[in-house]
Image (cartoon, rainbow, N blue to C red; front, side, top):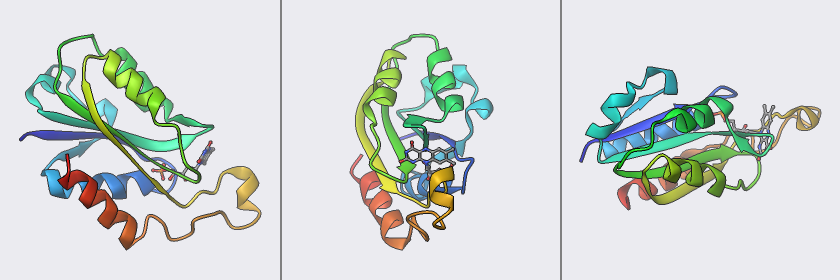
Length: 144
Ligand SMILES: Cc1cc2nc3c(=O)[nH]c(=O)nc-3n(C[C@H](O)[C@H](O)[C@H](O)COP(=O)(O)O)c2cc1C
């Protein structure tokens, strides 16, 4: 199975760590949206799309990338996120589906969050994603 992970991780590298854990299991390359050759997407059996959550949404670079994809018949996909609080994954899953992918699963973990109002208290979820979170990501990947 040929797999690719498209990831935007700009705040603390939280999502990148999760992407790398999933990528180990899937033997997938992890790329930023701008590094993806759109025409090469057809070569993959499975593509993952992940970022942190910012003001309740996936990162605009990831959303913009998925929106820009020409609609085509594509392979399987999954959506994942790291965030301070439980996120809504369905809006991104819907975008990915609209690009022609078959979204087979979603995954999220809580992660260190220093969004402005939380910074005063040192942030929340310090130290996460931790070893247990990364193991959960590997278990998720194994089930794909
Ligand atoms: C400006 C800003 C806004 C954020 N908004 C949310 C939010 O609406 N909901 C949430 O659960 N986490 C929010 N977070 C926390 C991030 O989603 C979390 O830290 C995430 O793990 C960042 O991923 P990254 O390190 O891969 O970029 C926000 C963080 C920042 C800096």
